[in-house]
Amino acid sequence: MKSLAPLDYFVITAYLFAIAAIGSSFYRRKSTAREYFLGGRAMSWLPVGISIIAADLSAITVMGSPAWAFRHNLELVWTSVGYPLAAPIAILVFVPFYSRLPLYTAYEYLERRFDLKVRLFTSLLFQILRGMHVAVVIYAPALVIHLITGLPGWQCIFLMGGFTTLYTTLGGVKAVIWTDVLQFTAVSVGIVVILVAALASVPGGLPAAWRAAAAAGKLHHLNLSLDPSQLTSLWACVIGGLVLALGPLTTDQAVLQRLFTTKSSRDCRQSILVQAVIVVPLSVVLSLVGTALFAFYHFHPARLAGVPFSDDIVPFFAMRELPAGLSGLVIASLFSASMAVMSAGINSLTTATTIDFYQRLYRPGREATHYGWVGRLGTLAWGAVVTCLALYADRLGELALAYNKVSSVITGPMLGIFLLASLTRRATANGVLAGALAGGIAVAIVSAATDWSFFLFGPVGVAVTLLAGFGASLLQAPPAEQRVRGLVVGYGEPGAA
Image 1 (tube, helix red, strand yellow):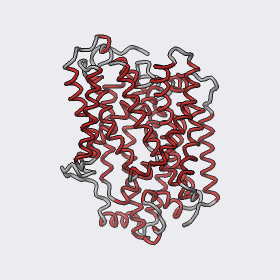
Image 2 (cartoon, rainbow, N blue to C red):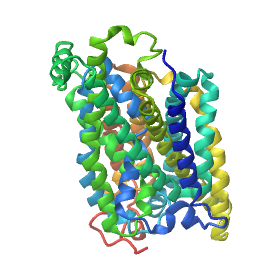
Image 3 (cartoon, rainbow, N blue to C red):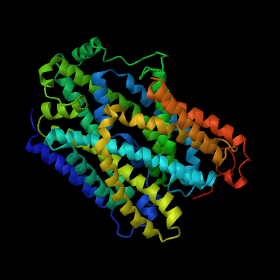
Image 4 (cartoon, one colour):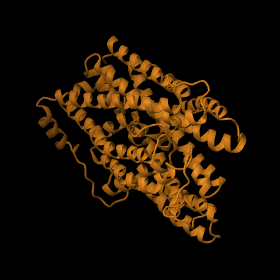
């Protein structure tokens, strides 16, 4: 197989050094917790909105979505519809709390609304979920490094995890957001380069590519089956996609920490709208890249020989078919996608650990610079943990679905807790915990006893958590006034930051 040219290695190296330089430029020796974790609450809406997109646009998506469309069809793209559906819910229900309360983590809100054990429980669930996500994210570009260099997979994983941990440790959340902007730009350019190059190399161009893809069923995009075992049926993708989109916007510290950095409620709302507007067309283009690659290899089947895994189809095409320089650009864009998610994930995991556990339980009342210093140590520790977990990420199956399988199990109960907290004054601490337990058990039973699409696990978890949580709360005394006023939609105003 064709190897990368010296120019490609130069492009990749220059890009990595640029990211490291930008991330490290935000280093401040005595950063306070507010500066390190929240960027001083001074960020504007556009970089934050782009950074929110980058939080989930890893190589899992950039490699996995085209690989899925290459093997199957376009039905998976309907999951992206969940983002514009989730945006107004997040803006109307949660932004009034998140933009006005002086929060470092979303789970502080739950302690105000309920009690400490609810805060710690949900923070721990987040850390499990996001830790597994970052592990899968590290694994994806490690596949690319292995493809390029032939290095063993474990060495590739440690290289990727160590590099990203370094600049995240130095720069804090500002480094995360501004490197995300650069990385999103690189990813977008890389996607367009692949799409144009693949179609330009098809004899007969776009019409011939369209006919070949249609004849093979690759353009099928609407599965109206009511069978819950159909993985990509329209209703499973849309309903499940709504939960998978709303969950991060309302419960995931990796996304919410970016919203907490905004300087006003208006900037917070606009950041969410930026994500909602861009994600759907971006998802469509990613899927069409897979379709274009299918058409290319349909007309040039001999050139497919040597691809190690179907998840590698994007970097394989870039290395083998693109001219020197462009190959390096696309490979760099794959690194970009995962580095953005890794840095955000590690930073948010550190924030949750430092604020929800270390500060709250072990060292309350210390000076602000102390927590900034602890945050740097925590970033190094979490970077090591998720890098080690990445060694086992290949056991989750197809790259496009790996994280969603994990997220669908945990996101439902977590989202149910936050909805009970914000929408009803009657919910109690013990009630929502009982509801979350019931939701988790329900998801476990459905996943073990049925062959339902895992996109339905999230909606099942939400529904059972809401019903069981509210029912259990009715069996207890109503919460005290200070637990609901200003903390439930339509009942008083949240306190100002």
